[in-house]
Length: 64
Image 1 (spheres, rainbow, N blue to C red):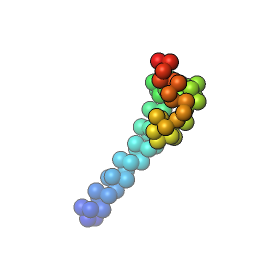
Image 2: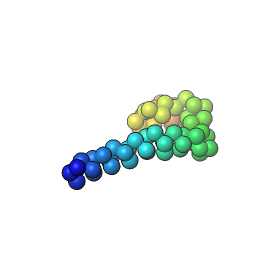
Image 3: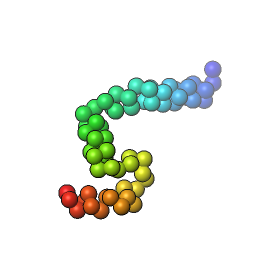
Image 4: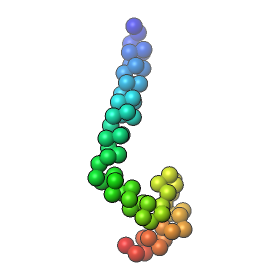
């Protein structure tokens, strides 16, 4: 097997491990759960690219 093919398979394997093992475990940590709850409480869409574009963000930042 060529060196390039081995490297490609190694990269794919690393990506699969990160996507299938590391990220799901990270999602269950206390810090991530608390942050998710905070976002939901403040009605912030975590998929928004820039939080400063959200009209609600000015009020939230003023309260902190």
